[in-house]
Amino acid sequence: MIHGVVSRNREATISLVIVNESRQTKLITAVIDTGYTGFLSLPSEIITELNLSWTGIDRGTLGDGSEVTFDVYAAKVIWDGEYRDIPINEAETDPLVGISLLYGYDLHIQTVEGGSVTIKRIE
Image 1 (cartoon, rainbow, N blue to C red):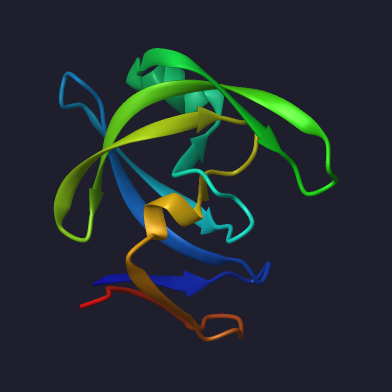
Image 2 (spheres, helix red, strand yellow; image 1 turned 180 degrees about the vertical axis):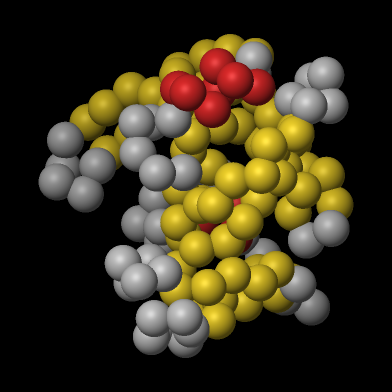
């Protein structure tokens, strides 16, 4: 089970550990974005710091309907106590957790400041 908290900005957040090919780790706080269909987005600063390997380009549609391209990088995250290989989209925003990373899990959010965020595998 994964636990997080609703921030004072009214965003559901969780902490994640990102792992690169050299097993260097970085703890980040990411916002859950149910409108984002990818796995995880990170700003270029974190991608550079971890020296993540570029794997290609992906296309996406933003909330305003505009089309964008993302550079995609490879990394592991510690997700629900296990290492998981995922693609990382580069985006100059706060780190975002998307629906692809949440797929197969139940998301529960107490939608008040300081409310709990719980992510549990669907059995």
